Image (cartoon, rainbow, N blue to C red; front, side, top):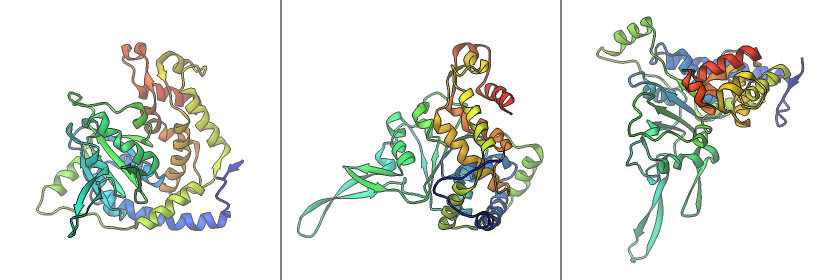
Length: 336
């Protein structure tokens, strides 16, 4: 089977195996630390961790009370990241995110401008209820998420590394909100759906979070170590069969591709950035699960969180009561 390696990664198989074994132990410690605080959301934790290991951002979508904020805080502690939180509201201004210039005056009366950094200068930024802010404020995150720097008064200011945005969104209350434009949605590596916990997980939540004390996560990794693992993810080999599966899946989701499901129900489909996201995330998922190379199963498992916010149904599909998940499931059946 042909194995494809990134051009910049000329590591021997033995070196990759040795680095991966060490990374697996570190990731297992992160899982353990997060698991002491977050119960019954294994897939949410997995997908959020995959987004971070892949070096990207994630949009957490779920009703209130499902521990989305707690998850971000816990990941920040376990990964040793400087974490900050912004509560998005309709009156939030771009300067409240990226910072602003203030005027200083010294003893001689001389005045000068000084840049005061905003909360975006964090390694892990939680954008809580991101769709409640105006489009102007939402767009303040665009440059940060894509370019990893902000520009204020013509001056460039680089963000810390690593830099990740985990944003939350309530899918129910849409009154008074501003839906994220497609350009900003595409900046998120994946959309993570946060569902209700099962009964055993909810029983554990009741028993362990309503007493006199609560479990706290512990730091088990540093930001520097996280960057090393992120670099390792991009060096992992990918078989040609996995690459073909990614191409076939993403291209079949575009109307006009010749796929009946897409031509009938999809208004617009994912671009090449979706293929790039899948290529990186399948590596991260393999490493997260203790494997040294991704498989087609990884492509199928990540298809929904990576594609669902990068495509839209046409009017006839919505009239039939179809969802994007239904279409993705049909596409997966044909590619698998």
